[in-house]
Image (cartoon, rainbow, N blue to C red; front, top):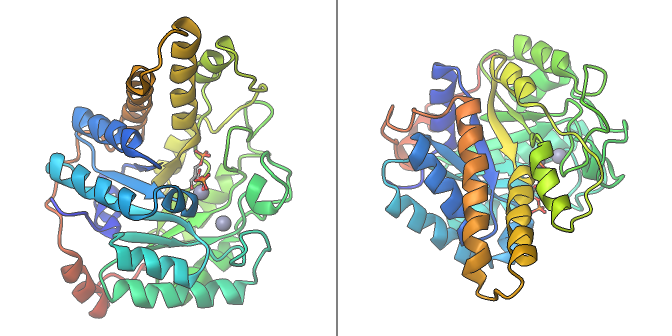
Length: 344
Ligand SMILES: O=C(CO)COP(=O)(O)O
Ligand SMILES: O=C[C@H](O)COP(=O)(O)O
Ligand SMILES: [Zn+2]
Ligand SMILES: [Zn+2]
């Protein structure tokens, strides 16, 4: 099966009222872990690469691994998505390479640090929509600024992030014509999101519900959605790691989001934790080992377990065979005919 349009995967998820995990990757083992989890649970899936992942893998390595995944798992609808594109040029280079979906993150300037203006964000996102839709490629935009790294204060919520304004979200969707909208509701990237189990004062699910009411037909995206489970933290610390106590986004809050328009759920940190714990365990328990496969296999297995669990929790499990992917050129025609504008 060729790589699939994210718009199609999210439209199908909306029909079935479920969410789709978007998992970050940098290497072969992470892609294999996701594909095995997708096969085991019969899930459509989004695999995403950040700018850092693209540079780590020299772009082409990752792209060809993704083609291998599509060939080896033909029954799985598989999207290749650019995570947090920082500029129109970055998005264009991903489209040229063969990504079937891109995120234009115009909430910050291309330096990835300076908060942008609404006007800049609209202009950059609109420009990406034009060049992406021309090729049938899906576009995710972002309004609001995530906590932690994105608000310029390093990892960990500082309270200085810009929670998405619902009015502005409506205007943003109308002016850009995007396919999916990432919103800021108090989550942040990385392991240090909250210093206790989050309540409504820090994790603003009510804001998400309000945005969904105003944009009932727009696919919402939750970034920073790792749950940072205690058992994964414990394995790392048990085998010599030094993670400080921390909390992530509880799965039941994500499920509440999914009942209110969230269709794409970004998860990276939980997989990083699972991989690191598994590798540390091998190093500590069997220090005589030095074949990378001795620790990469358990690492891959640990990540597969987390991904499969999330696929079941988000509801995408069992939906891989629901539909046959439509080609990107057919999507280009749909966009050209204005048949897919995110309606209000
Ligand atoms: O939002 C993410 C990638 O864009 C990942 O978030 P986590 O750090 O919570 O896994
Ligand atoms: O956007 C955040 C993802 O977790 C990717 O992180 P990265 O930029 O370190 O690859
Ligand atoms: Zn952003
Ligand atoms: Zn993100």
